[in-house]
Image 1 (cartoon, rainbow, N blue to C red):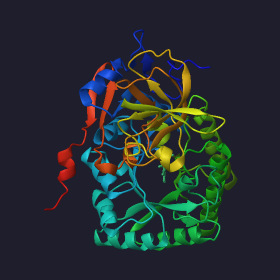
Image 2 (cartoon, helix red, strand yellow):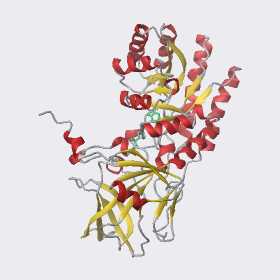
Image 3 (cartoon, helix red, strand yellow):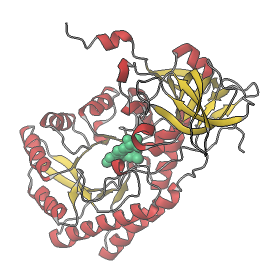
Image 4 (cartoon, rainbow, N blue to C red):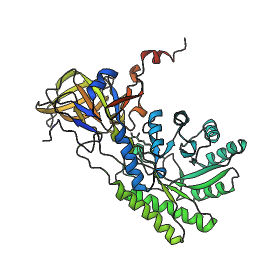
Length: 445
Ligand code: LLP
């Protein structure tokens, strides 16, 4: 059996290490020191981990500006500044995300805007800020954006989001490329081609490319490739029938990451080679220079960069009546589905370790649960945890950087955790913990 004290390197941040005294440090900072200073739960980002993954991705796709960080995975001003410093572009998918990016002085010309139901107000803000790209998600939006841009006397560069009809083999809630869902304009019905024609007619839009996104937490490299080939089919049709050559193909994000010791990482380099050669092949057939390939990963850049540290509270043992696991220990921590809804929503699994000391207890079937009033408030459904875990220990779940804080809630009037970054032995606070006063500040008496 694997040693519970070991941190699986492909799941934990690149600069996480268990020291001789049993303490886990990230970039040299002991996690329990952060827990004591900032309280628990607390999220800790390994800045160099994030930056190094940005560089790896830039390397795989041939340039930092070709990689758009999908900020829905996690956004704060500080991370927007890191993305800017690394030379990446940024995707936003709401007015709020746009505001945070602009507040961080992220250059608007490197911002791409998504959303299936962008309001006139949101589109107005995009045009006013002069964002680099708006990704048009529907025929209705095309008309609305043209009007908004005309009023501002602006010509807005756009991409058209197409649904290539590929089954992404991921959780149904996060698959976005099949026909029967809300995103994008269908390729198969010819609607996407019609949208391209409408874009070329629209006076205040410039069509620069096509976009697709297969889904999220995808490991199936074939799905990415098939989608790219189909999008390139439309690219050729536009070239041949409309005599118009697009400059960019945005193939979306979705690269899966391992969350547990038993999963393996996706070979991004191999995927990028597949995608780049699929695009190059079509360009060669057409006898033209290949368009620039853009990608927009969120999870693959930020997922493994953070851990969430909790304090252990109540422990109880139950008899399950189940022959396979007759006894189970419940270990409750001081967070839960408000700071990480992914296990409850998608059945997601995580790796958890005690981070303030070595443990040498016998490993027993354990369920790690939160503190919310719901029995589905489970962080890890079934894990072998040493039986010496006790109240007051600090327990951390790894790979919580993507879609945990950003999908957080205030269920049970919980306050959102503090978020800090660490680098070279230094702690840099990113977001302060919410307070009870923050909760009360919304009340209208
Ligand atoms: N581009 C578009 C158009 C997207 O919709 C998304 C994610 C991304 C890029 C980034 O995908 P990533 O590389 O992070 O997989 N809440 C779910 C994930 C939802 C993803 C939504 N769109 C989860 O926790 O697994």
